[in-house]
Length: 80
Image (cartoon, rainbow, N blue to C red; front, top):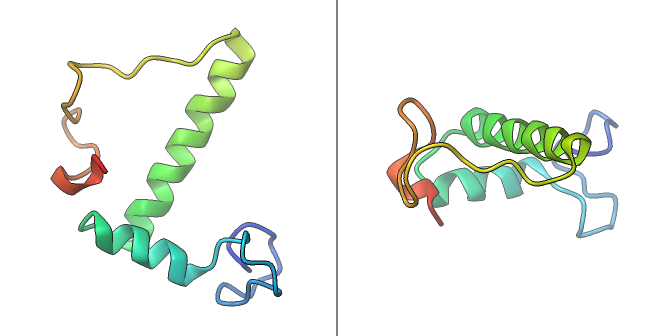
């Protein structure tokens, strides 16, 4: 489904390299030691945070200290 258009063909970018394919998501996950599902969930979480920030008029700040990953979230390598 080029992951973002909804066509149901996860490996087909429809000739548009800006579309996200399953291979793109796998590579991103591999770069951070994450599964495809983990990477997808992080994208969903980030999109929700961006939507929330847009509704409240500003970008929400992450919890915790700079450079740390909240417990149960992300991986050591996901700070890329």
